[in-house]
Length: 180
Image (cartoon, rainbow, N blue to C red):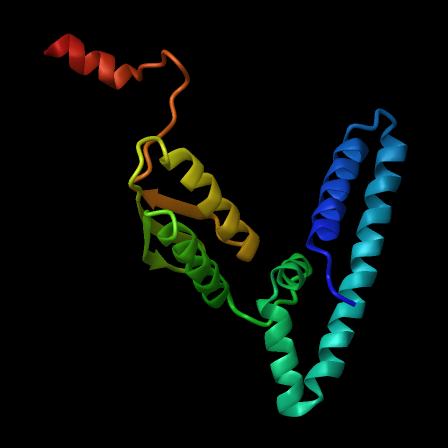
C-alpha cells in the first residue's frame, strides 16, 4: 500500500490543530485528561515501534537494511525521532538533512555550507543569489534541522540578514548615526 504524502501531511496538521485545542481547554481537568490520553497513545506507539525494530533487527543483514531504509524515509524518520528510537545519531541525521538542504539551495542558485556540528549546535553559512531570500532560507534551514534532530539547541546561520519590523532601527544604529 503506497504512502500518500498528502494524507500524512493532513494527519500531522490535524494533530497539531487538536493539540492547540486541547491546550486551550478552559477546564483544567479536561485539559489534563486530553494530555494524559495523548501521552498514553504515544507511549503505546513507542513501545510497539521499539518492539518492531527489535523484530526487524533480528533478521540479520536484511533486517539492518530494512531499518536503514526506514530511517532514511522522511515520514518514518520523523516518527522515530519523536519517540527517541531513531537508529542514527544526531550527526548522521543532521548531515542527511544538510545534504537535502544543499540540493534544495543548489537548484535555486544559492549555496549552503556546513561549518561546524556538535551534539547541541549546528553552524552553517548561507549564500543567496537573490536579495531578500535570507529570511525564507532561514526558515527552511531551521525547519529541516529541527525535524531531523530536535535535540539540537542552537542553529547559527551566517549570511542570512535579520528581518526587522517595518520602520524599526536598532538603538545601536541610531547611536552610531548620532556620533558621526
